[in-house]
Image 1 (cartoon, rainbow over the protein chains, first blue to last red):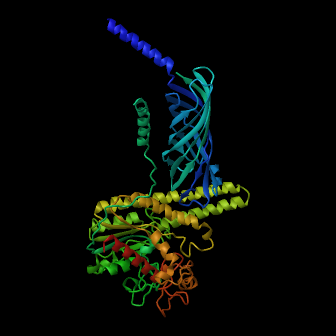
Image 2: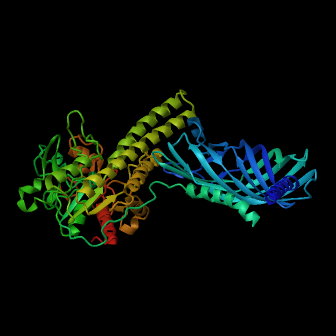
Image 3: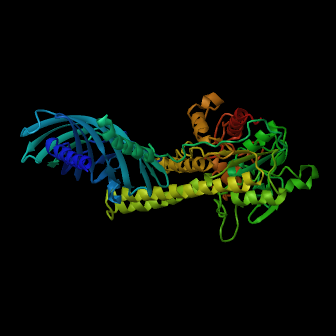
Length: 214
Length: 407
C-alpha cells in the first residue's frame, strides 16, 4: 500500500509540477484579414478573348491557433481558419461577364504549420516572435456563374510570420501578427468549353486576437 | 524525442490532407486515344462517313444537263468537277479525298446513296455486280451528326439535299454489311454542318443583339453578355454533337467490329473564303470556337478508345498558313464562278456552290473563274476544296495513316 500511495502522490506532484511550471500549450483565437494579392496567368480556353483576366478579392475570417512550446523560446503552431469565401471578378477584356454573377467563388481551407521563435523570457510583458513554416491550401465549394463544374488545385507553399504578444495576465495575452504565404492553384472550369487559369496568391495575412496559456 | 512525438500527429494529419487532395484538377480533352492497331491493315474497303467534304457524288442527279435527274451530270461533288472522261463517278479528274485515298490503296469507293429532292437509290454501283461492295462512301453534303434536317434539306417537303445524318449513314452500313470488318478502313469526318448551323443561329442572334444595342434598348455591357450567352449556346450544341459522334464511334463502329478507325477533328472554318467574307469576318473567333469546342469534346470522349485521331485543325491550319509548301498559289478566291453557275442553272443556284461547278476545259458547262487553276487554287467555293485542295487532304491523311503504321 505504501508503494502505491507513494506512486499516487508522486504522480500528483509530477502532474502539479507539470501544470504549474511549464505553460506548454497555447490556444489563440482571433480575426484575420487576407489581402490576397492574387495574380493569374490570364484565362485561357476556347473563345476567350485576349486580355481576359480575373481579380481576386480579399476576405476576413476567424482563426483558431494551437501552439505547443518547446523550452522558453521555441514553439510550433497550427493555424486553422474558418474557411472564408474568396470571390473573383472578371477583369480586362471580359469585365462585362461580372453581369452574369460571381465569376468565381471558393472557400479556402488553409491550415498552416509554423515554427516560431519567441524573443525574451517567458513572463515578459511584450514578446515578439517570428516563424516560418508551410501552408496547405485547399479550395472547396468552388462555384462560377460561367461553368457548372469548377475545380481548383491544392497548394503547398512556404509561410512566414512576425508577431507580438502582450501579457494581460499570467495566462492571457493579446497578440497581433502579420504573415505572408505563397499559394498557387490551377483553376479548371468545365461547361460547354473548358477554361483554365493558374491563380498565384501572395496573401498578406493580418491577424489579431487573444491567447490562453496552460 | 518529445518534439517529434508531439509533432507527428500534425504532420500526419497534414499529409493525409494532401493525400486526399489530389493536386491539379484534370483538364477535359487533354488525353489521347489508345489501343488502336499499330500494324498495317489488309484493306478491302474504305468506309467513309461524313458530309460534303467526303461526298463522292450523292447529289449528281441535281446537276443533270437535261435538268430531269438523268445523266449526263455536269457536277455532283463539292469540288471542281471534271467530266472530261465521262460521268463524275468514273472520272479520273475532280476527285475528292476519299476517292484519292481509296485509289492509293488500290480500292474503288462509290456513293452509298445517290439522289435529290426526296428520291434516291442506295448503292447504285451494285448494278455492276463486281462493284456491289464498293458503295461505302456515305458522306453527303449538308449532313449533320444526328439531325436529319441538314443544310439544304427542306424539313417539310423533303426536297433538296438528302442530308442523311451520320447516325443513319452508319445504320445503313450495318444494315447492308451487318458489321464492320478488320479489313475496313473506317474514316469518320463529320460535324462541319453542325458548326454552320450553330454559326447561323449565333449570327441571327448577334444581329438582333446588335440592333437592340444600336437602338439603345440594351447597354453595351448587356449586349456583350447576350453575345457571350449566344456563343456559349453554340458551343454547348457543339459539345452535344461531339459527344453524339463519340457515342456512335464507340457503340456503332468499335463495338460492331470496327478495327481500323480514324476520326477527324474539324478544321478551323475561319480559314476559308467564307470565314474571311465581310459578313463573317467580324465573328471569325466565334466560328473558330465552334470547331475547337467540338474537337475538345471529341478528344475527351475518345480518350482511351482504340481509334486514331487525325487532327485536321492543326494540319489544315499549317497548310493554310504555308500554301506554297503544297503548291497552292491562291487560298483566298474561289475557283468556281458564281455568275457562271447562276447562268448555267437558270438562276437556281446563286451562291456559287461547287456542287454545280465544272472545270472541264472547253465544255459549255465549264463554270470556272477565268484564269483559275483547279490544281493550284485551294478553294472551289467559299468552303470546299478544289481538285488540288482535295489532293492535299488525301496526301495529308495518307501520311497520317502511314505514321499510324496502318498503310
